[in-house]
Structures are given as C-alpha cells and as structure tokens.
Amino acid sequence: MLSKERVAKAHQEIQHHLFNELLPFWTTRGVDPKYGGFLTYLDKDGNPTGETIKTMLCQARMIYTYSSAHRAGLGEGKFLDIAGQGVDFLINHFLDKKYGGWYWTCAQDGTPLDRAKIMYGHSFAVYSLSEYSMASGDREALDLAEQTYSVIKTRAADLQHGGFGEFFEEDWSPKAPGVYGGDRKSLDVHMHLMEAFTNLYEATGYHGHKTDTQRVIDLIFERMVHPEYGTGIAQFAFDWTPLRAILFKNVWGSDRDVDDEEGRPLNNTSFGHNVEFCWLLKHALDILGMDVEPYKERMRMMYEHCVRYGIDRERGGVYCEGPNDGPARERNKEFWQQAETLVGMLDACLVLGDEKFWDAYENVHRFVMDHVINHEVGEWYPLFDENNNRLWDYMGHAWKINYHTIRAAIQSEKRLTALLANLKD
Image (cartoon, rainbow, N blue to C red):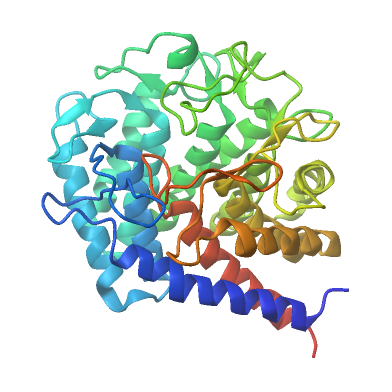
C-alpha cells in the first residue's frame, strides 16, 4: 500500500542526492576554464580524461541543465552564470553564420570539426536557449531559439510526407542513407522537437509555436505509435514505412559491440523512450493549456507496457528494449532510461492513480540509489548488464553529462512533493 512514509523516504533520498551529490559534482566540474563552454569527458572518479572534443548536443544540454536548476531556485545565481558562459561559447563557435543552424562538433578552442547539421542537436538548441532565456531574461538567447526553430521548419521539414528529416551536411543537403541517417526519421528526434517547441512556446507565448507543438504531438500519435499496442516505433522511411531500427554513426552507444547489423526487429520498442514521451507529453499539454483526459489511455498503454515487460522485478531497474507483446530482448540497463522512468512513473502515479506505477517507481529508485549512483563521486554510472554488473564506468562522455540525471532529480523531487501533499497522515 502506498504510504506517506514510503514517499517521504524516496523524497528524502532524492533531495539528498540532488543537493549533496549531483549539484556539487557539477558545480566544480564541466566548465572549461581556458576556452569556455563545457568539457564533458570524465573518468569514474570524476577527473578529466584528456579528451576535449565538444559536441553541440552536450554544450546545449548543459546550458539547459544549469538554467533549469536556476529556475528551480537552486544555486543562488551561480548556475545561471555557468549557463551564460556556455551560451556565449555555443554562439561564438557552433553557430553557422553562412548556412544557418549549428555545427555538430568543435575542438576545445571552438574550431569546427564536424559541420553537419543534426536535428537531434538542433532540438536541444531550441530547448536550452529557451530555458536560458526564461531563467535570465536574455533576449538574444530567445531570438536564437526562434531562429533555430525557423531553420528547422525551412530546412528540415518534409513537405511531402510530414515531419522532419534529421541528418544533413553543412549546406543542408541530406546525408547519405543507412547509418548516416539521411533517409530516415525517428520517434526520438520528433519527441525532442515536441519538447523543444513546448519550451519555446512557454518562453514566447506565440500562437504559431503552440500550433506547431500540437502538430508534432498529433504526428507522433498518427505515425509513430503502434496502432495495436500503443508503444513507440523507433525509425521510419520518409514515407513513414516502419524500418528495422539501426544505430546511427553519431548516437550514444554506436561504439558498443552490438550484433545487429541488420537492425533491431520491427517488433521492438524502447521502454525509456515510451515513458519519457509520456511525461514530456503531459508537460506539453500543461504548457499548451490542453486537457490531459483524451490522452490518458494512450499514456496508460505505454506505462503499463513498461511495468509489465520493462521492469526487472528481481534485480531492479528498467531494461532497454523489447517486443511490443513480450519480455525484454535488450536487457542491459542504461542510465538515461532509469532517469526517465523515475520521472515517468511518478507522473503516472499522479495522472493515472494506479499504485502499480508507484511500485515500478520504487523499484527503479532503489536500483538507482543502490547501483547506478557512484556515491563516492556523486554522478551515475552509464551502463549495466541485466545482472547489474557495470559495463561502462565513466562519469562523463560526449553523450553523457548532467542533463538526464539532474533533470530527473529535479523533476522527481517536484512530483514526490506533490504526492506527499496528496497523501493523508
């Protein structure tokens, strides 16, 4: 039975982790003291590895993290200062003044290395610059968020089939097909565009931004959610034919030894993306002023699929992927899926009111506290096998920084506070 004591214990543990481990870890690490921006490669002890490449994605995500922490009332201004210097580096070195948009990677000093235009990164430019503008009142940041939104619409939109292309060269010509992504669309990127457009609308209040957010939501449900099982479909051809999902060259984990040259089976879905989509959708509906009621059963299908097939009831945590109608196939446990499941299952408790979602939350919470967090340092280990053995042990990487972990802690703390308020003594 869900009790105030159980919720209070989880709330206390999340607060302790956020205030005494995560935020202190990232207050003293990450900022590049020589060139500005952020250095993201940190070993298991939190020390710099010597790798200094800067990805547009991580620079933007760290801007979001520090800005959101400031908006949550944390840091007494220091997190806003950290975010601000990150914005300066992003604008000065990643912004393409010739073709528009943002380069993908730069050297430590800001020299462009990979000038490709990747929609995954562009969604986070909109997301982070909008967040920073709401934290700081900075009009230039908001203008750049709006300019990026316009570039996405004019350069990446698929006017024939709907949605957006995702992988482009510097001049916005499509990248090669296959692992280079030039012939595919993904739920992942469209989910993050929904997230980004939501933040932009919150910052501007412009009706066009609201309308485009609604359109992405409708598109996801029309094209990217399984009509029978209600779970997310990962990848598509441009005409929305579902494809076996492959690892693109520039995604987290593409260097992992995975035997799937032909891609994952068509009957496959990501537990983490399904749950993340649900709570981001609820947030979008709140910001847009839309009723959640018409979406509740769709959310329930995704949440219940994760509870039934994704949660490791014996060892704790949530698996990576599996079929729509059976147990998990990819049974490793990635840090980001744990983070998103924490927030999502708390959202499910509040929106749907079923105690099984609390049980799932508590399962993953315990796994994170007991296995995922490196308490001696303060951050999370990135990857475990199904038996909870660590496969990777670094604290920071080109793809792993504080975005998932701090966001999950802040958002979980808010939802646990709401749950406590709903429970009687």
